[in-house]
Structure formats: structure tokens, C-alpha cells
Length: 247
Image 1 (tube, rainbow, N blue to C red):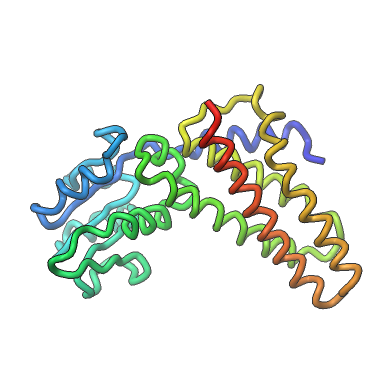
Image 2: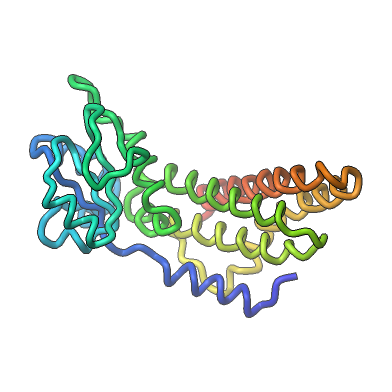
């Protein structure tokens, strides 16, 4: 069981971690407004801005084309994650894993760009996804993947049966709350019991994991991590469906 105080703490943590800064786009002047229009579709205009001297107050910078080392250095020094769009060349201050290849003559690969933005934002992406629906699927995918990995590691590393359950469940509560944020849902204390029903879907998976550990004591640790991963993913997908269809 999870103590009510822990649940309220998770609620405050998720609320306090909401990203309120916009996405900044810089680089090739002819492509910046095109990408801005794609990302703003159906969302808030102010949630996407062109990179400027105020860019250090952005959630993430998407840089298109040839590098401007001064701008990229400024973003890096301000600890702003950078997603780079290039024709295959690397960009200074941008990790290769954060590069999206744009071939000459092709349109902007919006889905790939959204995935890269979601990966760069991590858990902070939920607030922006609420303001920019184009980001929503990518951000929710990243939230589910990240939490599932985290719970898999915890489940495999904890050797005392049952000790990991409150930690795994609390992580799943945070996941459900963040997915609710991504869908623009206002979540307060009155809705926590309702949301716990969504999280409860993962309890059956953890029962299976304990039985596997008893049945196969050595390989069971691997199975335990795999079941925790699958259970957390199931909780995330259930939350996605719940918030996509609820008012």
C-alpha cells in the first residue's frame, strides 16, 4: 500500500515539474516559420518562438541547418537541450543522438522531430504537450518508455520480495499524473482514487513476477524486471486511453 502522504507528494512533485517555457526554433530563416507552424497546429502560438537573446529561457532549442556556434554555445551554457536538424553533418554542442537528418528536397520530418523533442524534454515534456497537441503522442510515448525502464531496473535490483511494490506503484502514479498533464487535464486530490484504479492494472503483473521468482529463482530476476516493464507499459497505455476519452 502507498501512504496518502506519498500520493500527495507525487501530485505536488508532478505539478511543480510542469514545463512552462516555450520551444525555441533557430537556424535557416526560410524553414523556421514552417516548422513553427507545424508545431503550433491546434495549440498555443506562444508555446513556440524563434530563437533570440531570450532563448536561454526556452525549454528546448530546435536548430535547423548550418550551425551558428555562438547561438548553440549560448544554449548549451544555459543548459537548454538542443535538437539539431541537418543533412547528415554533426552540429557543435549537439549530441549525435539528438540529430534528425533532413535530406535535401524532402519535407520536414515532423514525427521524427517530435520524437527528438520528446526525448530531450523527458519528464518535463507533459506541460508542453498540453499546450501543443502535435507533441502529445511523442511525449506520452517517451514518458511510458522512461518509466517502464526505470521500474524494470528497480524490480530486477531489489532482492526482497514485495519491497519494490510501493516504489514501482508510486512511479506508476507519477506516470499517470504526467500523462494526464499531457492531455491538459487538471488533476487534484479528488481524482486520485479514480486514477489509482488505472494504476491498479499493474498489480496483476507484479503478482506474476513474484510467482516467476519463486518458480525460477535465478532467471526469475530477469523475468521480474521484464514483467515490471510490461506492467508499467500497460498502466501507461491504459492511462493514455483513459485521458484520451475522458472529459
